[in-house]
Length: 388
Ligand SMILES: Cc1cc2nc3c(=O)[nH]c(=O)nc-3n(C[C@H](O)[C@H](O)[C@H](O)COP(=O)(O)OP(=O)(O)OC[C@H]3O[C@@H](n4cnc5c(N)ncnc54)[C@H](O)[C@@H]3O)c2cc1C
Picture 1 (cartoon, rainbow, N blue to C red):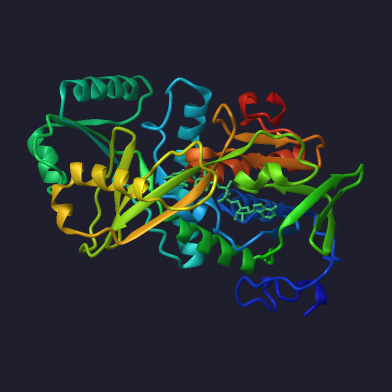
Picture 2: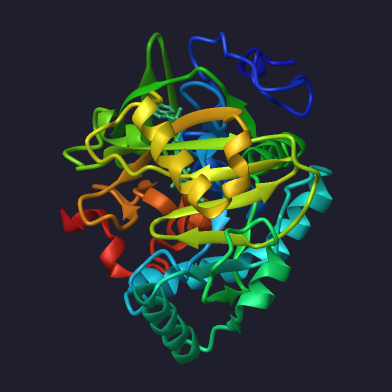
């Protein structure tokens, strides 16, 4: 084992992600990916598949940022303003998931809990019915599949749901996946393809030169041909990134446990959602624009529990089994920030806000094109880091 590989994940010596104890990464990887969330790991994977030599530098451990806290909804239709470029991108990204999830699960032997049971939006009031009408019209216009369910069909599909739904819209082309499982699957595949993942290696600064990029942390340094900045909400804190207005937006989630394993659609109502995964019901998420840490609060727990009880009255007998939070990376306009940053050798991919799981594989494809060709035909101008 070379000194450079010591303590890092490698196909020769690594048995998992370890803190790296080297003071200098002496080998010169072609691409250093900063950040081991879904965006960084997907980028590392696609870049490695396209023949680049890649290493990942992660401040803590892979999946420890927003990715590890996420619900994993792959839900482009009920998330955003439908006609916007962003919504179109989300649908393109969604379409990549079924084949990619199948491949990822097969290659890694990790169960991703990938669900293709769709999203159900129930309506209990006249205003709720009007919302369904608008959603249905939009789905029709976009040639998205939808199904209008009457109260009996709603009861049959989700028997635990509160009685009295006037109707519901089922969007069958919405999915969900377990983000922690995706991280583990990617970690295994990267390990096998020789991509080193250096844990506990926080990048403090970077500097682009004409022929490469220098990256520094506390007591170590590295050089490479290209850098991908995928450090989520922490991206603005790296010296050399410039005045990028990326902020953290806290999201809290809760879960109820002890259910028999059961599949079923994701449920959406009034800005919140609930989904079944294994023996748990996950309920999310708060959107706290004035909080950029991952602390959990009683108010957050109550907000989510009230929503869950409103939807599933039977939960009143159950205690919340888990309560956690993560910090979403958000730009002021809440659009992703993807593109070359000050130099063609430095590509940033952050600002995925509420849709980083959905957008991860798509982002990686775009980033790999930017590294190889300096441009991507798939990348909307609206996502450029130069817009600030
Ligand atoms: C509660 C909640 C629910 C969510 N639900 C969904 C959902 O259902 N569907 C969906 O699509 N999205 C969801 N999201 C959003 C999604 O989680 C994020 O958009 C996505 O995880 C962002 O991925 P990322 O890789 O950019 O960032 P992160 O996952 O935050 O990864 C960034 C990584 O960079 C590391 N890092 C930071 N600074 C440095 C540094 N200086 N040097 C080295 N490494 C560094 C961090 O430790 C971290 O591991 C949710 C988010 C939250 C909080």
